[in-house]
Image (cartoon, rainbow, N blue to C red; front, top):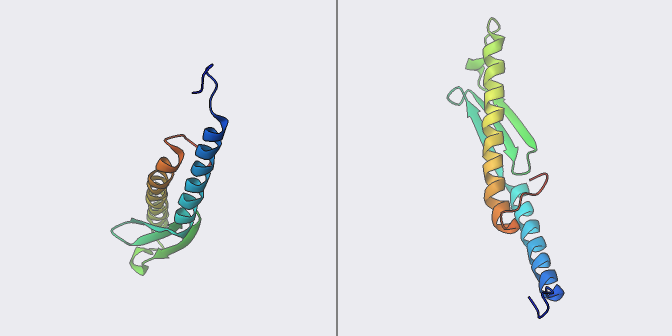
Length: 107
């Protein structure tokens, strides 16, 4: 702080600009990352980007039983949740240092 308790605006602007660059870098890393969620011992696999865009769903034919569709539905949902959790953890890892621990909407 400067005399009189006034913050140095130039310093604040430099810090904001640095944070903005770190956030942009973290977003680029998240966009490039692909994470996988699995369920049923690998019978169902879901791939998601670090930004939460779902890329693919793979289902092993052994998981397909016409008489038990509910189990397959549960496996798909579990794999989606697993992938979403991996994406959330990566987002915290990448964005935490960039934002100084601040919680930003959408991340």
